[in-house]
Length: 265
Image 1 (tube, rainbow, N blue to C red):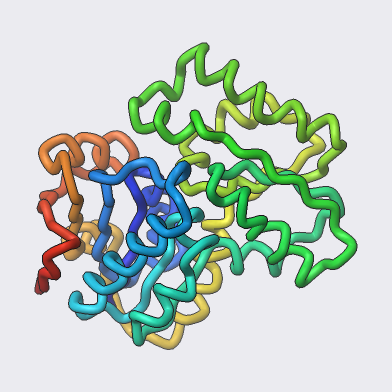
Image 2: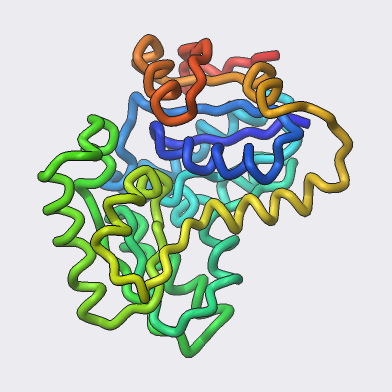
């Protein structure tokens, strides 16, 4: 059983870690589109083009299911991905929207995701009376990718993003970009204990587990990573060190071009 998942960079590691915890009996192909990082400020047409190229590439990789580990692409071009892939597609926004129980929900997301109101629309579809407020966080992804996760600069930026949501008396906060769980300790320090912090990757992993329960495999977590593959669209020599930092593995990472559709085994 092989999963495909992608992100613009290391953000998808947060989804991958949850998947490993919930569904340790499969391998994966992880693609980081590092050449076009970050996605959060790109236009709708640019994201659609990226989704076309990524899903077309994955259509050649012999995967059994696909995880959209990028919220921005999820918000703008989920239909493109589903059109190009003939395997089950699991997405973050739809997975978490159906499980939200709180009545006043804040969302931290990229500018492109916020513009679509994808989280608001998805939550209201299940709970029409919910108050939802979305906050764009354009500085988070670049700072996380530059490993500034423990800096005073990032703390100040985070307070600036979160404080307006607290003024609206939110009782839960969704991390609407897969990079953001990488700074969970910082966000937790800023939030009052009464505000529930929600990582959509947990709900996605639970949905995936239901799908996986019908599949038979006996891979250990170590085998999971050993049998899996990492690809990037740039900086392939630096990416193993990021994987070591966030996943505690040092994988072989291959460079691919999405403009030239390549098939891997």
